[in-house]
Amino acid sequence: MAKLQLNGFLEEVGGIHFVGTSGTTAKQLIVVRVPAWTNQFGEKQGEDELWQISLIGTAVDKFNIHNNRVGAKVKTEVYIRSNQYQSKKDQSIGYMVNINLASIEFLSPGQKPASNEIPAEYYEQRAAEITPDQPKEDLPF
Image (cartoon, rainbow, N blue to C red; front, side, top):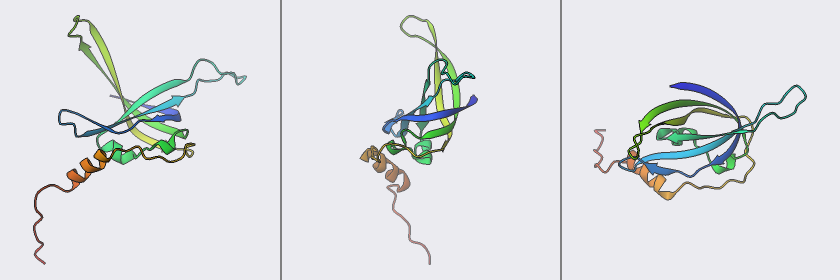
């Protein structure tokens, strides 16, 4: 698995949804815009790159990224992983690239007003993980 640093601007913060066979793994997507390079005259060469980055499981809680951070300058490290697969439809070979957030540093504040897009199910799921349905035993003191 390769690790890459991307410096740019946080363009988009997706909502949190649940994936996996049991539907309990939190997943969030963010988009980072990496500006195109400029030549010695300050002229932009090429186009900006847009990177869709996944936050999965505990990374959603760890990084706690909300919509109010959109527009912020960021320095990120991402893990890149690629897998080969064979199509069930026509047996052709394809490749899938996954990009997961390893770290993020905010170098400036976001430019959008704060808004909370985290669904209530997310908090309910986290509460169920923290507080199991088993009865608590009394402490001996």
